[in-house]
Figure 1 (cartoon, helix red, strand yellow):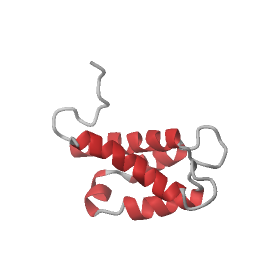
Figure 2 (figure 1 turned 180 degrees about the vertical axis):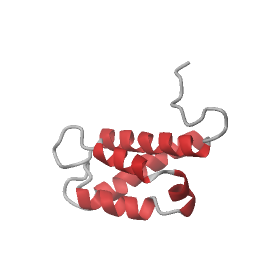
Figure 3 (figure 1 turned 135 degrees about the horizontal axis):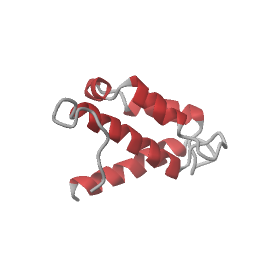
Figure 4 (figure 1 turned 30 degrees about the vertical axis):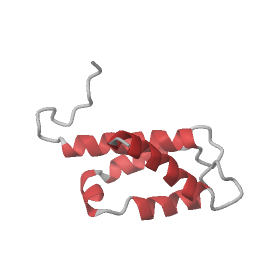
Amino acid sequence: MSRLEKAIVSMVEVFEEYATKDDKNRQLSGTELLELMKKELASPEFHGKVEPAVLQEAMTNLDKNHDGEINFREFSMFLATLARGYYRARNKGKGNKGKPDKPE
């Protein structure tokens, strides 16, 4: 598999691993999400690149339908927010001065 394919498979597998810890196997509870974040977002490289404000933004925007659970769609949007924050931090000072990407 390509790197992108592996990333997609990994994203789905991580969601399924944590979402199946209770009887709602297509949703992440708040407890499951916290466990996921503690275990899966623990590397020093990641924490050195993603600012706490980005994590807070991602958490605030998670539960779009306000049902107290995180479905896969909401989880994928959360990961996209984290990826954008990581990208901005990684490329800070490399010409874009932290500005959002312009659509092509």
